[in-house]
Image 1 (cartoon, rainbow, N blue to C red):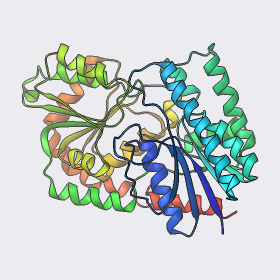
Image 2 (cartoon, rainbow, N blue to C red):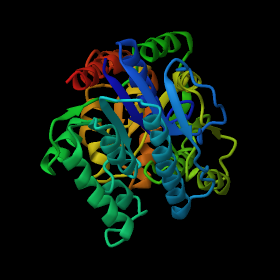
Image 3 (cartoon, rainbow, N blue to C red):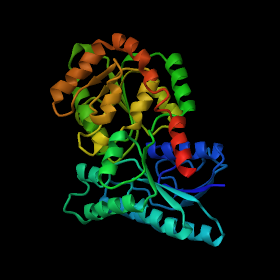
Length: 396
C-alpha cells in the first residue's frame, strides 16, 4: 500500500487557492486507496479549525499569523513551519510510520527544507509541487531584489529542488517548460481547476442567481501580485460615465494590500459603491460571483506571472459570466477561448476605465456569449482529471 506524506504550509480550512488545491487532491488520493498524512500549519487565513477531511490524518504545527506586511514577519512564519514540520516528522518516525512518497508544495519555497529532510528521514520518493515561480515572483513584486540574500537563497533552493525530486508537478504547461529548461525532470502539469462538486455547484448557482449587470466582482487574494488598487482607481474613474452611474464593485478576499485598498476607496470617495467582503468559504464566494454582471481577474504584468494560471480563471469560467482581465501568457490563451472575455492592460488608467464602461454597456450581449464558458473546462481542467495524473505518479 502506497503511503504519502503531504507537506504544505497551506491547507483547509484556510481560504486560499493553495489550500483548496492540496485538500481536493488529498481527498482524491484518499478515495482512490492511498493512505495520506498531511503535515501543515495551524489555520492562519481563517479562524475555524474544523476540516472537512477528518478521515485524513493531519498534523498541524503552530505558525504565527502575519498581521502586517513585513518581510521579517513572513520569514518568521516560514521558519516556524520548517521547525514544526521537522519535529512532527521526527515524531512520526519514532512511531514507526513509513511513507513511499512525499508530496511537498510551494510556495513558500522554504517548504523545500522540510521536503529534503523528509526524503532522507523516510527514504521516500520526493514529488515536488510548484504553484508559483519563486524566486522570480517574489522578485517581481519587490519583496526580494536580485542582489538580496533572500533571492540568492531562493534561487539556490530552486536548483536543489529540481535536482532532488523524483518528479515535479506544476500548474501550467508554460511553467512545465520553464522547469524543464532549468533541469527539472519528469515534470507533470496538474491544473488548478475546480473539483466536479464545485463545478456542479457553480452551474447550479449560475442558474439560480440572476446576473446583475451593474455589479463587478473581484474574488481572490488582495496582495502585491494582484494590483487590486488599479481596479479600484479605474472603477472610480469609470464611475464618471453615465453608463456606470449605478455600477458597484465587490471585492472578495484578504491579503497584504487589503488595508491600503480600503484606504484608497475612501480617498477616492467611492465607499458607497465599493464593498469589501474579506475571505469567504468557497461556496459563499461562488454565490457572490454568480450574482456578478462581470467578473474581474487581474495579475501584475510579469514574466514570472505569465507562467501561472490564477485559480479564479477556472472559477470564473465555471460560472458562465463575462470576464474582464489583464492576463497574459497561458491564462490569456485559455480566456481567449471565451467570446465573453475582455482584455485590458493595467498601465493606462483611461483605457482600463474605458474597458469597465464598455463591458457595462454590452453586458447583456456578453452574458449570452458567456453561456459557453463552462465547456472550455471539460474535461481537461477539472480537478479529477488532474488528480489522476497524481495517482499515476504515486503509483510508480
